[in-house]
Structure formats: C-alpha cells, structure tokens
Image (cartoon, rainbow, N blue to C red; front, side, top):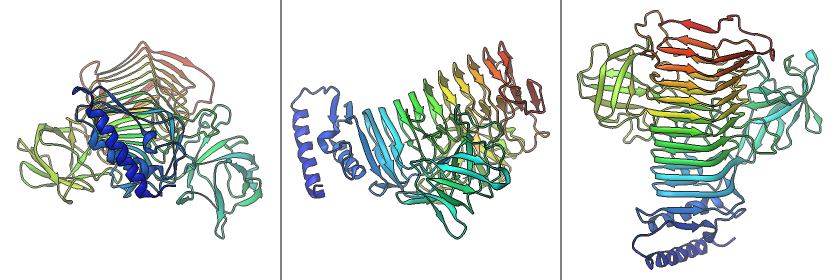
Length: 593
C-alpha cells in the first residue's frame, strides 16, 4: 500500500490534469464522466472508505455548479470497513441515535450528480451506514448493491424438536458464533461487534413464508450444549410450532444504521439498487423533496441462503414533501413494512403566550433534527381524541430550544402567525407540519414474506397504491395509522386510492395495528370522546376497489375512526391454506366514527 502522502499527491495531480482538460473545451460543458478507478477507487483496494471520502472531497470543488457529472465505479466488490470509515454526526428518524456514525460513502452538497455503480457491490464490514446523500440537488444513484459480510441478524435451522427434551438447531455457515459465560449463552460476533439475540422470526424452509400464527417468537439461547458440526442443543427451548426444517432469523431490537440515508435533498432518483441487508431500515428519507425509487429492491441476493433482509422497514419516508414514487420494486424478508410514509407530531410542552409554544419530539428514536421552516403551514390536534383543534396556522419563527443548532435538538420554540385557540395547551395537544407532506405513488411492487405489515400511508395528499402483489405479508397488507401518543407518526389520510392490487394470505400472525388485510387503525386513547373521524372525509376520500383478496379466512377491512370509505368491485377468493384464526368472521369491521 502506498504512503498516504503519496496517495494524496497523486490525487491532486490527477485533479489538475482534469481541470486543464475541462477548461480547454467550450464554455457550455456537456455531461462529464469521471471514472473513479483513475483515483485508486478499485474493487478490493485497501482502506476504501477513507479513500472514497478523500477523492470526493478533492473532486467536488472542481465541478461547475451547473455541470452534470457522472461518477462511475468499475464493476466488482468494494469492501468498506467500519474501522476505516469517516465518522459523521447524523440523527436519523426511527433509528437509534448513537453518535457518531461510520459512513462508507458520503455525498454531501452535490448538484446534478449521477453515481453509476455498473453493478458494483458495496460490501460492508462491521456496524456502519453504507451510503448517505444529504443537501444534494438532482441526484441519481443507480446500478448498485449494498450488503454486509456478517449480518447482526443470525440465522439458524431447526434439526430436531423433541418436546420437553428441547430443540436442536444448526447455525448457518456464514455466522460467527460462540457460547459464552457459565450459562453457555449463544453470542454472535463480527468486526467490532458482538450481540446476544433476544427473539426471532420463523420461516418455512421451502416457501420462505413466516410460519403461521408465530409472529415474534421467544427463543431460549442459554444453557446450550455444543454438539459439534455447528449443531447446538437448547434443552430448555420448547415450542411445538418450530418443526424440523424451520429457519429462524435471530434478532435484537437494535437499529443503529439504515442501508441508505437521504437527508434534505431535492430531486433524488435511486434506480436499479438492491439492499440485501442493513441493521436498521433499507432506506430512510427525512425532509426530502421529490424522491423516485425505480426498481429499488430490498431483497435476498440471488443464490443466497439467507431468509431475511433488513432489521426494520424496507423504505421509510419521514417529513418529506413533493412526490414520492416507489415503482417496480421487490421487498422481501424485512423485519417490518415495505414502505412507511408519515410526518412527525410534536408534543406541546409549554404555552408561552398566545402565539408562542415550546414543543418537543415524543419518540426516543425521532429527535435531533430540524422539524420545520418559517412559512410552513401547521395544525393542532387533541392527543387523546385525535380531533383537530382550531384552524390551520403558519410558522413565523422556529428555533431549537435546548441546543445551539438543530443537531441533537429535543425541543424547539415555535411562533405562529395567528393567535392560538385556548384548547392548545401543554400535555393535551400535538402539532403537525402540513407543508412537509408528500403525494405518494406505490405501484407494481412485490411485497412478500416479511414481518408485520406491507404498506403504511399517513399523508393527507393524494396517495395511490396500485397493481402491487402483497404475498404473505404476515401482518396486514395495508395500514393507515396516525399516533400522537406512542410513535408520534402523523397524520390523517384524506385522498387514498387502493386499486388493482392482489393480497395473498395476509395476516397469518398478529402485530400492532393489524386487524384485517387492510387495517385503518389510528391510535385514539379516548375513542368515545372523539367528535370527528380521523381518516377520510368526503365520500370517496378513501377508495378501495378492483382488488383481489386471496385469503384463508381473515377480515378484509377494519375501519376505526374513518369515513368517506368506498369498498367496491373487489374479488374475494377463499382458500384453505391455514386454519381460520380470527374469531370475528365479518369481512368488514367498523369501530368508532
């Protein structure tokens, strides 16, 4: 390996040559293609994370503000190590707010940029965030794979289930494990990390469906006996549902890093990208405008023996605006939803005067970042009834209250243009940002064999979910939520079309908010005291039509606090894939308004 000083000297020489060549051309520059291989960014090179960071820092100032640039990787595997990766303070919605975060590839402040992967793989080692794009305009990332050599989710397969004598299992060949302590506790480890998993998800070996009526299973990984050949006996693990051949993904509840983080970008396209694993969500976008995912997959790599992908959602959009388009993707094996689109409710913690409030983030995984801007339109609601309070208002001033900048902020001071109604009081109300709400298109996607739910939509703007296949989502296929007491994810759905989708045997296990194949389930502590339905509005606000339900006997539609719902021209086919497990056999269940 070359001395670092020689490496940087070579980089500067190459940049000087590039500048001389670019200035020799016409004043109106065409698209410029930069092969990163010329800067030593090659498959299997040493210390790649730090090299990529150095190259981007040196290259970016040479790019004209109106110039379109393609940064091109050679095909191959790029090994990114957390020990080598630059550290960044990044507060990421719905993730553990541990700081700083090792980042494999940071794109910060670029304009008119395409990162062309040509099928390359970013293979990460340790615990890290593979790709970040923030403060970028007109960004495209395409033809790229993201994976980890040692996932923190561990995979085992049941060999014997002998009832009271316990369960014998085999550890997957890529998992590094050991039995630790006097109680012989199962522990897995990788570069810079070691974990003891606390639960699991059980998959059928041949179909890869989550085992019927299991959900989040308990596991007993203490008192183990090593039988050799990666076979382990757990004498105290008793679960008759786990027949021989069952594949189990062992997991913790930690989610330190997503696979991709988009932050305060305008105009982002991710095309032909595949995320095979992340110890968090596959993709998180926060405060971004106009996002297109075109054939973006969170999927098991072809030929892989893994049954799982991400620790949580495949894609997650928080406090975004403009349009979100997610089309022609595959989402499978993740430990939560394929897509979740929502805003963030703040808690009102102090009414300072008739125009000024102190507000705070409510969830321990959603804080530390900017929430709104001057000129944003907001509204208020009663946290217990989820009724809206007063008229819409406009922010005239907003700043963090407990930190000098937005980074790490828990609380903020917000000044409003119009006088606040008397009902807006500390502890009783939440505030929602209506400006940072997107239109959504979720179309022609395949969602299968995942834990919990298929799609969650929580935007008041037009949302279309069409021509998708939801195949064994385990929980509900589609959920409309809204919660100002726990997750603090906003808000009401006012214009939703669900059409042309096929739902195959959803709801084989129970999870939060999952009462039917399509479950409209806002969290309302005082439902009896509610005056107005939370979701819907005028007739046809929520249209569910021309869909196909292939079901073993589950409720099709659950409505809580929703009006204006049209459910028509849907085909229902009953099957006997599983025994019925729901006591309420009605196709449509209505609760509350």
